[in-house]
Image 1 (cartoon, rainbow, N blue to C red):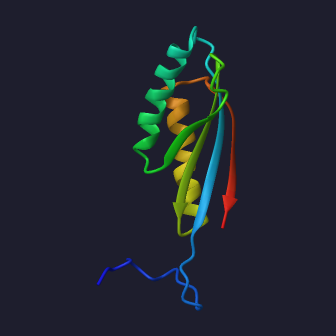
Image 2 (cartoon, helix red, strand yellow):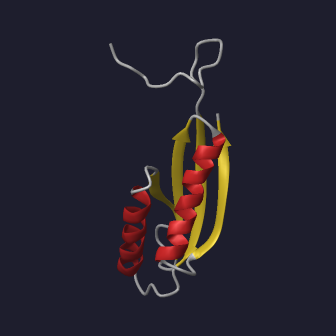
Length: 110
């Protein structure tokens, strides 16, 4: 038998609750002089952010040297813990590459 962990968030209808947080990030890479420079910065960021147990992908501005759009997804059982995970992503980006973050926005899916 497979255990699915604690059942504290199981609604009375027997279905487990889940929330998905989608963090949309826009970056400006002023120092990038080529797509190769951009990819190096994004690889470094994705490696760091990936350690936070979230999924991250480049989702916009693929052909522009100095702009990048990242999508970051976190799945959890409650909004607070999921939001903490996504806030940690923003903090890591600001710490690892200060000044790159132009915009960030969280959307919620149920």
